[in-house]
Length: 311
Ligand code: TUI
Image 1 (cartoon, rainbow, N blue to C red):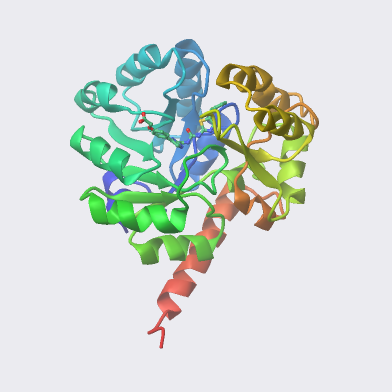
Image 2 (spheres, helix red, strand yellow):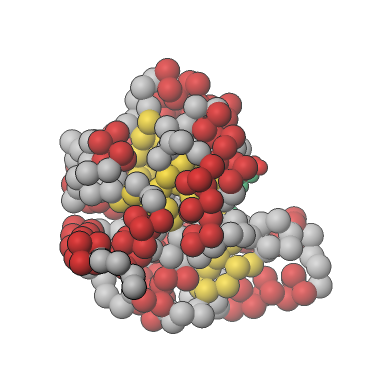
């Protein structure tokens, strides 16, 4: 039991990342039914889609689940209101500051857990009333910060009093054990659930993850302020060309428009954005979400119980 499992009422201290286009009610319900915290990712969707997903998730599970709000979504204010109306158990946020929505969510009894890429943002979220923070390292897939999980997590833990969840580069019991050794109260995993049976994405996306090696991902758009980690393909070469000639944020953004949908829905190997973390190289099998979670914690518990003095 950790502060996070107690706070939310879940069995395993694991959140499934609220990945845009990827994390719909199917995987969220599967992870929650397995004892973790499943999360529906809003990405760029509108509030009607999200309300429908929440209702569908409730049909598949009576366990707590969460919703992730991607704060760059222009509909974030409308989505925030729907989440308060629906009184979802947990809201996580990404790609911006959740501050202005926290009072409304707290009034609705929601547990609020923003993703933070820095100590400064973690302190701000604590001051604004967050219940916990997810410290996400640059190893993660999708929109990323600059610090690695190994450096970010302990610095955030030292800086705040609320529980810290470690994310970025965690896909097995060794990663979980390392996160707990650093003082985390839970982990968040995304990429490993892209390789689950229940996730509703094109088979080509799952295959990309299974085939990925340690150096298969790349962050595009850092210079333009739109850093996204994804698996290398023809599209990342085009992103690289734009960056090499110092293209503007708008040009880089326009190349990315619709690219995540092309990956997730169409399985377009050349023109899709296959967001994935660096740990994709370690993932070699598609498994049910329940098996992923149970194996991860069995391994972590073995490591942590056997750990004696280092020397
Ligand atoms: O949000 C994510 N990962 C995502 S969102 C996403 S959807 C997307 N699609 C196309 C282009 C861009 C995004 C795909 N992956 N992770 C959580 C996360 N949040 N990582 C980093 C941050 C973050 C960054 C800056 C959180 C707060 C922040 O604050 C900046 C500020 O000062 O407001």
